[in-house]
Length: 142
Image 1 (cartoon, helix red, strand yellow):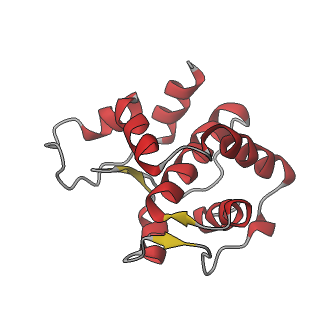
Image 2: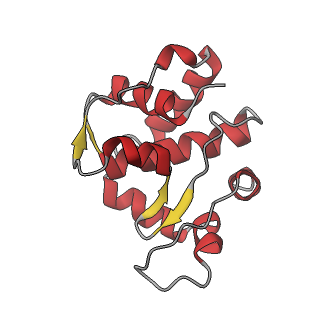
Image 3: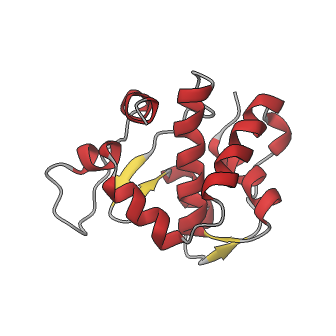
């Protein structure tokens, strides 16, 4: 199985350069839609419900302190299958031209992030996981 860095590397190969917050949201939606369309996760790392939307902490650790990014060290897109790349390409076609803030706002309206944030005050730190089952259930209903 690929990891989140492989997914991020592939996204950056397609988009060239992104803000780190937009990269995080595209990785999140790639995972969510893979769970629905392919009935399998793209990666095993957990996604947490941070104040600015879903974040993969292990990916965050690689870009911490950066605003824009064009390369993920340790990411290797060749670890992704053709089907996985097709799923990511579909996500990029749908969400790739949206702004980072638009994507943040969208995730803040969706049940997986909202449910994981339950009990966390607005803007506060929260490391509650957005589970794969919550993503699969919500996005399969769209």
